Image 1 (cartoon, rainbow, N blue to C red):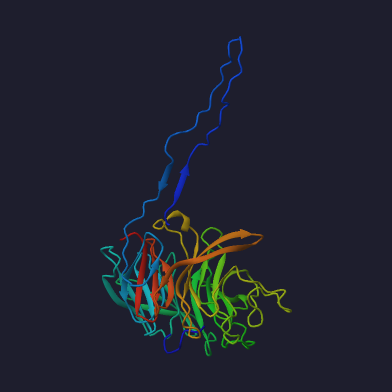
Image 2 (cartoon, one colour; image 1 turned 120 degrees about the horizontal axis):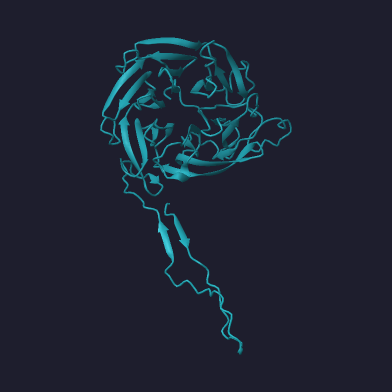
Length: 391
């Protein structure tokens, strides 16, 4: 699905009990002194039940369904957020459909933004933001280009901008999307298709591209994805993953939306192969590692690596489910994906982490340095913060 051009439990119980071993009820008579052996007696102590402490919670978004122990706060009001990331100080950077990049601060750490100001302006349809992990420079993916923003005096306002790449194919249904730095130092980015289901004339469309920020070298890393909106690297293996949204012309029941493990030079099937990809001609294409409801628009993606959530969430993938223009009845929220390595790929368990009330449509999602999950609601002009307990 395309973002419109108009602008776009937890009660853990561990039961410990020692099994009782039955003893004989009669003992043979003997004239010899008995041999004394240790006797096992039934454990009559009470069954011990260990219950995780569930913290107090709160919700500032009525109708939200959260996992036990989690809270949701409205972190900030901001016009149609399209991408978000965090600077090296932990402040929130948000791209908006109004062509601005905002910086938000939460100085008192109460889960609500204290200040909102414009970091930079003039970036039309900015669908990607990331920060260089060493220099702190901000990289913006906007229609047809990537810019690098510098705040040399650290006053919260960009004082210079330079172009990393321009002339990306961006006319049509989709454009260049979110971007992330890999462990190899290259900058990776999803490139959407120009159409719903067609053979692209420009090989850069419907791909994952990567860029060497030092030399300017650029290349297609993988292909065959209709609209890989967001990408993220696995925190343990460093492997690249991407969400993808399938074609819209096959009815409401197909194809499913996807989470893909991205292999260099891999082909993921668009436009002719989807779901199990077992149709003739799809033998060399790579199926997804996780699936979501057809036309539900699986967009934002991030892995959890913090310490704020319970341990069982470590290294899980989280996927924002934006919802559907084709099927408004579909639920929206954030899905949790537990990935298990198997034979060079992964199996997955997919479940709801949070369900939003009708009308909430999450686009960007990102974990902050504080361990909370930040979610941009494109339709309702809001940033939400989801934490374990109350800040």
